[in-house]
Amino acid sequence: MRKALMLIGLAGILAMGAAMARADDYVLTIKNHRFTPTEIKIPANKRVQITVVNDDPTPEEFESHEMKVEKVIPGKSKAVVRVGPLKPGRYPFFGEFHEATAKGTLVAE
Image (cartoon, rainbow, N blue to C red; front, side, top):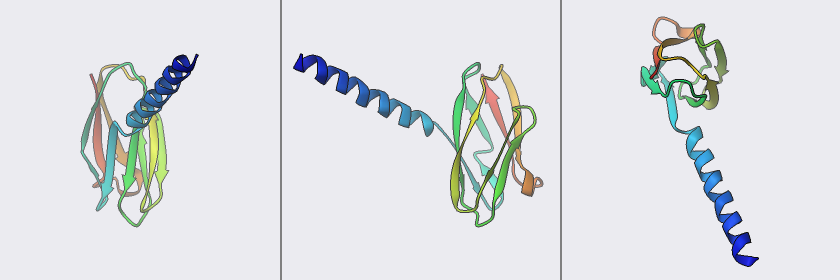
């Protein structure tokens, strides 16, 4: 019985670690009103989480009409954006508050 409980506990810890790692699999940074990296590759047909880190002191909105997502990230903070599942293809995104410079592409493959 004791071994079974230890195995269940270990499985729970491993599952928590996998979930935590998944949330940081894709990180997008906003600095000087630009996204870095400008292109992110994700697996097609899977729902993913992207952590958007806003290093600027002003808010920015992560937006994509094609992915049907928009989220405001306050200055000097971060937020998680969930997208997908997406068919294979290229999906542009932009920062609505600084559209001239804040641009990028998500590639589902």
